[in-house]
Length: 231
Image (cartoon, rainbow, N blue to C red; front, side, top):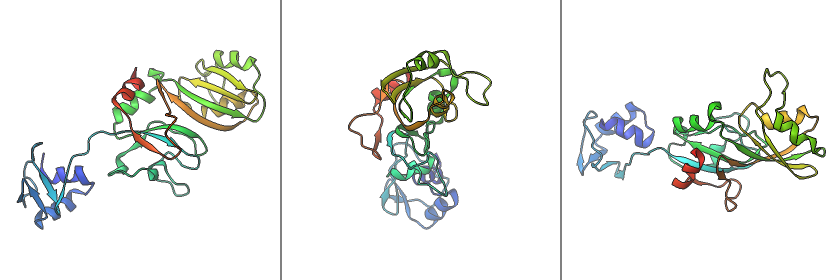
């Protein structure tokens, strides 16, 4: 890899900014100042910029307990984004795996691996997502069969795929869906004449939101958790 590209990949600097630092003699390779941007860098080489060691950042997979009031976008003029909760380098390279609404809380995945996020969100893979739902009105038992049969949403051509509804309390339920239409959970309850007052995502695939991860906290996914998501 070229030295200037290596610096860009490690720091987020532009190619021209990296080249300027190299020409100014601020970059060393294995302890020697190098002023040629085209110098090839090997994996075993030690590179510093302004006396700070550089290391390539590989693909990253984060689990975030999303609080209410944050939007799943890299930039928004009105609301704070979920990425402001992260203390990570090159955070602008990350994206959310699917989205949670501004007022929805719970399990959110963040990554810079586009193929991985596509695998989790592509409709053909049917990765299940489980939400805890609180509604304005009591949830009738017949709603279980209605969700299982599929709900026809407003302005949609096809009914939703069969979903599993478990009624926990009069106005509280767990709902597992296998697709990700726009505002799907809220629209499904609205189609039955009910309103979602609060929504919290508890699980994606085989991965549940850890009990010890507080709202606003995040951490890297473990290898076992990565496997659970794709199993």
